Amino acid sequence: MAVIKADAYGHGLETVCEAIHKQVDAFAVATIAEGIQCRRVQADKPVVVLSELWRQDQLQCFDQYRMHAVVYNQQQVKWLTEYQGNPISVWIKFDSGMNRLGFDADEVPAIYKKFQNLPAIKNIRLMSHLSNADVIGDDFTNRQLDVFNRVADKIKCEKSLANSAGVMCWPATHFSWIRPGLMLYGATTCKPQGDKIPKFDLKPVMQLQARLIAVKTIGAGQPVGYGGIFRTRRISKIAMVGLGYGDGYPRLEDCRACVLIANQRAPIIGRVSMDMITVDVTELDDIQVGAQVTLWGHGLSIEEVAQWAGTIPYELLCKVTTRIPRLSVNKKDA
Image 1 (cartoon, helix red, strand yellow):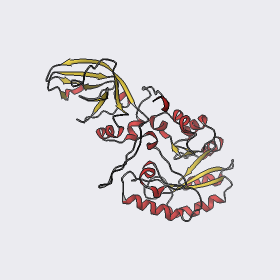
Image 2 (tube, rainbow, N blue to C red):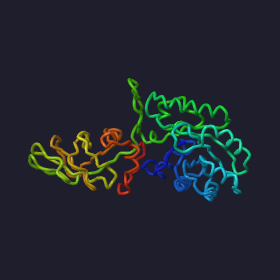
Image 3 (cartoon, one colour):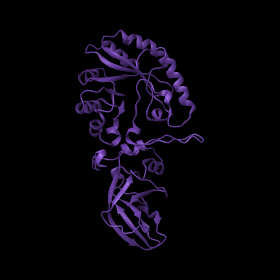
Image 4 (spheres, helix red, strand yellow):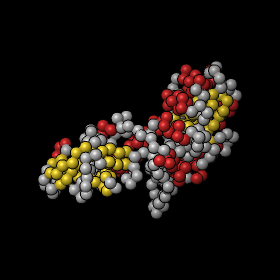
């Protein structure tokens, strides 16, 4: 079940849906609007709406667009009991320890039995969500798995627990369905615990790139950018990248932060502006206006950029704004 919510994590929902729909068994989205968008691109694969069902008349959308509803509270059970339309496929979501959406584990058998007798429901599946699976060997994930197994043993239906981290790091969480999200786009938040170092063969789908719009030389002791928080220590050649926080790049202040120009790292200096980033290219040869700059992608991982920004790859990918054109490249042409 490919997770393509949040505009496919910033990659373009329709683009991703068209590219992979023949390789996956279902799609997962967060909202009804995303589900409708997915359904307009592909007509055959199941579309599971993970978190939006807060009004009874929304059930008609699930029927009209043949989407699966995730049910996680008693109000939704009441709506389904009263629903008179065509039968809808549902996923019962229960809380295995994350304390977010979901029924209490002890409620599930009775809800499942009730759903079996409702004419409004045609397929019933079971799911929960992992909270700490990106920490290799984390004991809390084992506890969640124990809770899930305790419930799953009582229910004879298809089941799903593994998110991206579960897929990569926790084989025991692989039930009928797996739900890869971030890993589809070539990124991970998996972290080692102790000496256990994860190794994954993931390739970044997104390359965030821009161009140099100016190159100049300034003297030693000169301030750069807003607030003058950075001052040159020598005569320096600096360059301006035509991209900034207005495009979704984080307004970071980390001495390790850099960009990639001609496969060489150029440190970011001064504050990131709305439309520009200043980099030090003193040590780089033959840098010209128009040169291509990689903010993250091949050679500069989004995981590293996320560390500089004190965030996670999910947020960086989702925050790339519509001002940045998305140029799709077929794998065979890359």
